[in-house]
Picture 1 (tube, rainbow, N blue to C red):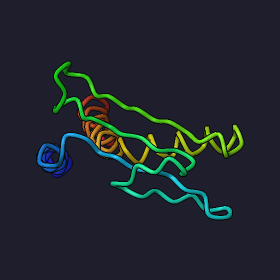
Picture 2 (cartoon, helix red, strand yellow):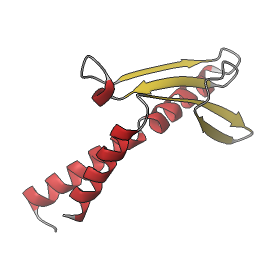
Picture 3 (cartoon, rainbow, N blue to C red):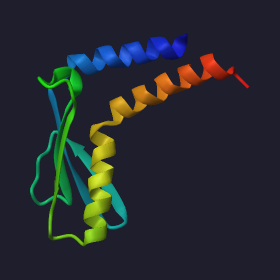
Picture 4 (cartoon, one colour):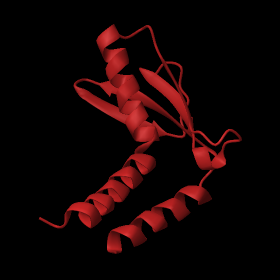
Length: 109
């Protein structure tokens, strides 16, 4: 039950934020860094996520672009890193919902 309350709290918090979440991913040596609210063309990847609750179509919209100044491998990695960072609230909500469903259908074994 606590998981369901937490998911509801996250959903409420998500609906209170701005319609779009923007961010950029940078590489610093072997470390990758996400910066929220930054749309920097010089970053390895930059993008915007518009949550489905806020869009006209009812579907979320994720837009990511990468910089050709980085290797293909680094561009792919940065794009995936950015996707996870921008959609992390929805990823966590899916985890909570699936965990609750599995527990209710298959027990706590």
